[in-house]
Length: 114
Image 1 (tube, rainbow, N blue to C red):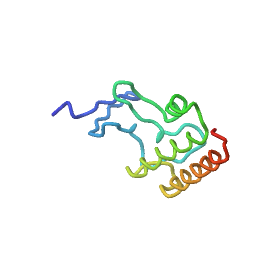
Image 2 (cartoon, rainbow, N blue to C red):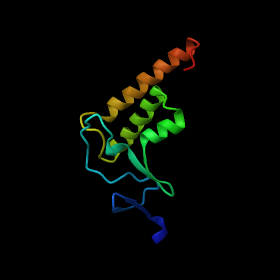
Image 3 (tube, helix red, strand yellow):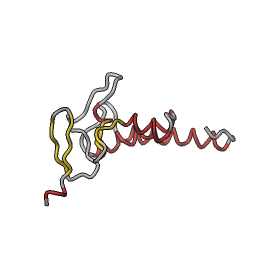
């Protein structure tokens, strides 16, 4: 049964989880100061500690709109686990995704594909 656990190391702490894509251990919710936030951190088994900004850079070439969708999606996931960005909600982030998606769809319909 030992193999069902993912052993994650970060900042000299050990964290065990049944979640195949566990989060970095953190408090309930975090107040953002505009800098990096722990709710954007996660561990990819076999790779190590990553930040959402790494995914945005390598997956979508730092695209602003797509990056906002990825960050909002991460926060929605963290809210479902009782964590996330203090002062916002899943509804706020779903609205952000909707706004961003509609903006991109308008641009595509106008022939602007970026």
